Image (spheres, rainbow, N blue to C red):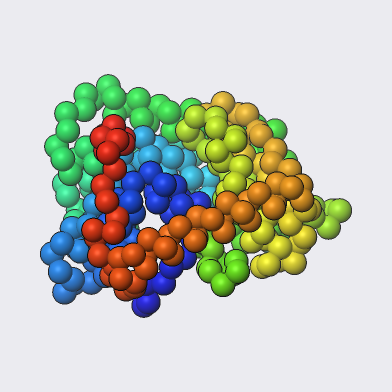
Length: 303
């Protein structure tokens, strides 16, 4: 493996938020997955894979939706027509029960510290790593939020529309892939996407946090560029859908020429800043930590 400079929206946000966190996440933790990794790199790798109880909810909701949609797609492919018959629908109560059991398993594994053996594949929670006091009622609230999100999603017109669509129109989703942007690899993993009858495509991004359409739009514009390169659909014809599953709100991101040009400028500027900072630190594979100073906004360290 080679630690090359790549870009993603989340990487860009980390860079803007705290340069030292960026260094730890993309350089200090590099190789920490190996059994013979230096102790510092191993610990950094473990810590960067931790979830807070809030991001855990988002992760569980994403995993549950992914599982359900793959099941819908398999059934629809077998039938060769509508994804599901009326007698072959989704049992919401069963899905909620499976979600709750999965969260209980996650919680037990984290509390027992199992993630330390395999932090990439076994969920670990910040609250358990640092032994933070969290009331039982707060943990139950996390489950309630996840259950509400899935229940609302499965009862939505959007899910019924996807459920009845032809899986042959679906694009690969929840698969990490990349595309080339001016010589730099840009990572993308679509939550869900499908082709439309007019020769375009729709890309969906599930959100479990606050509704911040302006902040989240760049992600969908990047996905439009990804779909253009990987699937041959012109970026102008790739409509984005920000789906806030906690509320059911759907915000459309229209990839106009000016919006796409703005996205390219933002990506280009972010990559250039990362490259300059990397060169200041002596270049890859492990630039000097001193070139990535800690933030002076200590409030960022508590979030």
